[in-house]
Every structure is written in C-alpha cells, then in structure tokens.
Image (cartoon, rainbow, N blue to C red; front, side):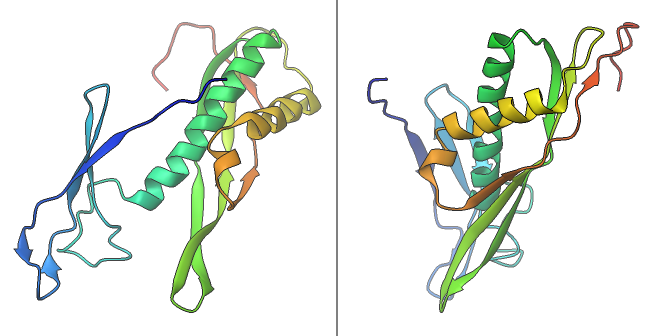
Length: 167
C-alpha cells in the first residue's frame, strides 16, 4: 500500500481568561470530507464549565478510532469469508491511568463487538474469533498504538427477517 496522508484541522479560539486558567477547552475538528466535530478536553480531566460535556474528547476519539478500524476490517474479512453481516455494534471502552509520575496514558481498550448475521445458520465461534483476530492484526490504528487492545466479541446472532427493523 502506498503512503497515505490524513489531515485534521483543529481550531480553537480563546473564550475566557487564559492567564487565569479559566478558559474554554472547546474547539472544533474539521476533516477533508467537510464534517466538523465539536471537541473538548474531557470533563474528567478539565472540570466544567471549562470543558464541553457534549463534545468529543481526544480519549473518546482514540477509543472510537480503534473500534471503527476494527469494525471496518471485520466487515471486509467477514464478506470475503462468505458471511453476510446485517449489523455490528461495539460498546468500546478505554482505561486511562497513571503510567509514571506526571504521565497518564490510555493503557487498555476493550472492544465488545456484537455481530448480527443474515441467513439461517450461525458459523462456529472459532470462525468468528479468527475473523476478529485477523481484523485486529490488520487494523491500522491498532498497529499504531502501544495500548493493550482486547476484543471481547459477543456471540453472533441472526437477523430477524420479519421486516421489523425498529430495534
């Protein structure tokens, strides 16, 4: 694969008293596709009102990036393996802790994918575990970080083909 360049514009303007450490950490992330995402320091790191609870913080984005990358690889690998994925949901969690005096890091990310397959037959758990393992090994983001990443996949289920998609 050729070298790729990814860009994000991070834009912040002072709102508050910067010198007194009483300023908003709210800012925007803008991406090449035109989407802008409100971002902020986490309220667990910078107390309200100087952070923005409704915005995405870098730690959440880190966890989401790992989860999203894993999912995209899993979907492609499952398709290549002849499976039809109806839906995929992950309740990913990251743990941040002190790793040295004055140093914090996200040391563990746990992915909990729940896969719903179309059709009438569930593949054996070993086959799905192997696909999750392959997805983890291929994931660009997982290959870029030193945090431990754990995949705790739920057993796959079959889609309800009754036409009711309200759940």
